[in-house]
Image 1: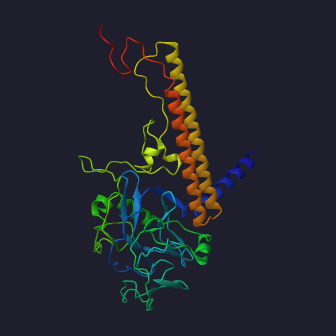
Image 2 (image 1 turned 90 degrees about the horizontal axis):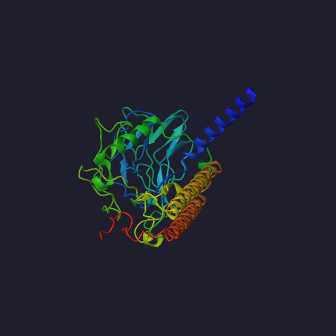
Image 3 (image 1 turned 45 degrees about the vertical axis):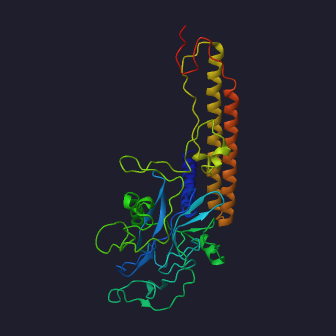
Length: 396
């Protein structure tokens, strides 16, 4: 029995590792509005042979409801022969989805976005591996030939001058993965290395890198090495890639100067606010996990009559039922994501799944609102000698 348990445990571990190796590059968080344009900046000097350029990008902080700039940087390749596929934002038909970057033997699809320095929308023109050595294309990289002796010069014609930072949707890049990029998605991937993770963490804690603060022109656009945003060689952005336009529902500053933690996809709504009203003001949540949990309204006064007690009991039962349905749909949608990751689903398949998820979430939300309205009509009337719930008894 113990041997069987260990075998099952080992099998689950292997499955978990397999999923983590493939799913990290798929779908991340979703946001209702796209990131700002990519800023204009120069590339810092390559620090040493074997380092590969990873371009900067806009990431999302759900605690502040704002994009922030993750500076471009040089990263030591985690394995000989591996290249970096940058992360990218893409419109799913319901929201903008973040696709994580990854290391792999070939470059995958990164939205057709022109990150510059060899990443001009498809593939990578900044360098190539020759045996155990990485050779840099000097025409698109900033290298010191005294320190880096493996280089070549090949002129690259960039026919993609756009600085738009997302694929699809209104004003987005129009591009789809080619056969080679689709094949790259099925290859073995390595997640961002620890230095890249530190780069993201450092950027998320720097208020000056938030889009609402720097207006699309970050003061730290690129760094010589990943993992630190201080020291020599830091590059400032020359300009924003386009005029910055804050979203209609951007977080507003509090008295202490910090943004209100209010992601647009995770906003709680009053029970009596209709879905039609929200459609005119805020986006419909894409996933069930973005919906607020249900709780029984606190009674304004103790239940005195049998009718009041029964009504409060029905409120509690409805809240429990709605939370169970909410949790069931959230788990189902998470399983959909895992299944699609294991199947190496295409971008079109992922977008269709997100469209279905939004439809499911909206239907559940509308169903719960209707149930709550029906129950509120059954509320027992207040006694004739009392004001409405929460008020004071009338004086005679």
